[in-house]
Image (cartoon, rainbow, N blue to C red; front, side, top):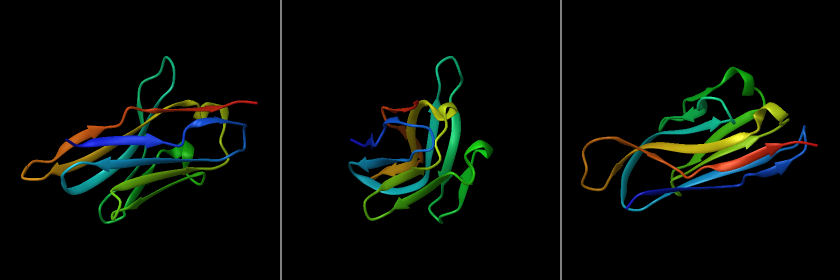
Length: 121
């Protein structure tokens, strides 16, 4: 069974940094997109960044120049390095991956359980 497990959230002061990790485990044939979303209280979930299997990337305008997404295909893991954090970055961050489990021909989306990031003094 495929699972995504996130880690690295926590409480940080404004201007600080955090690094989120998300590891996909289970019988996986291939992974295409790996994405990070976030959802703040009372707001809709928004796409923060994604990285493709060819290492093309996308960033939400408000995080450009501060966040960096990367992946380690040998570990089926995606990272989100978050620098110069602001209070408005406070949210639950969710990992998402578009992948094919073994013996399955269709791409499917899988989600992690979410990790809380709080930016506050």
